[in-house]
Image (cartoon, rainbow, N blue to C red; front, side):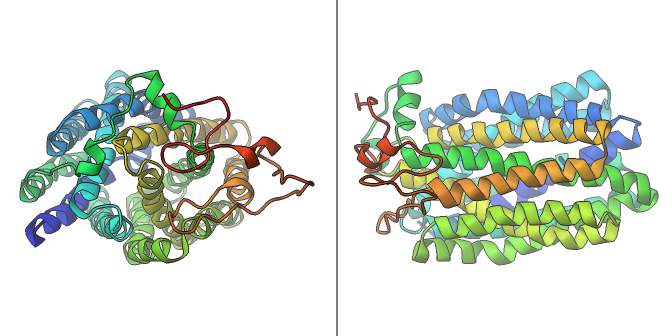
Length: 434
């Protein structure tokens, strides 16, 4: 392992974040300016997330199966580039739907590919710190790209944002070449999982994975639609300044992510995962309630600090907990893909739900609905999420205690007697390892 390879990984995170910045809120501004309704925008975004949800597990299996993680990352970057060109050249309904499907699949490959490269380069013990560094460079990349894209959208056109997105793929490919060939650690090569549904069934014998899956779903059910919903409102109220304000809404949380992510990685190594999860998930309902109470466009920019806190925590926790529950096996990328089902499932419901609430009632009701989902996630972590840090097997706080066995509000009493899975954590009864 050389410093050149690690620098390449830094820049890969930076430029991939640049490429991905062109999507999301800028799409909402782009389509709103072309007289799409909130329902139509929500449908377009949901199509992409549904395609991504379908692709999550196969993409994780592909990354596991392909020896070269650089190859899968390269394919993902090139596909995102083609998607940006489609938005720029053909902003029609059918082409937008196709582009959303392509972007969803490409993202499914990029996330586990970069995480797998990181794990292979630094190992499990240093993974938390490395993930924090990844998030820092991604946050800086997102912030810079958002500022530049916002200025380009304001002074030229929103279409130019997608031309810039396509161009940023070139330095991302160069960064991949700096990393060189990545060898999978022998510990991961030694334990092969059964293919197909048998492998998935074995993954879902882990109690921590099941609870975290539900928490991730609620996180994105609360988070995914907040900024697009705010972006549409800003476009109506601020008009010509919409691109600048939306750029600010992206830059502020990315600054927070860049500052906080290394601290999150180091703190997760010291105190464990659960406490940080509570902090990150609690930021979601606070943010949503304040957005509903203070709809001023410039206040929305300041409130994005809460988005930065939650993004920093989730960005580190997703791959870190996946690595925790699959340690000593080759299940890491499959687990990442499986967790992606929760991420994109929550995002799909979020955008559709928020669009329907905004069209049927108003934006305040939509923000309140998103906040309620975030609060449910906080309660689930507090009640049921076990500690996954290897040397800190802390039990979750219980809502109700019965004698002689503990019983939690969200977990059956039998959970106290659940045997352990291959990863050393609890598994569901009757799910024996084959």
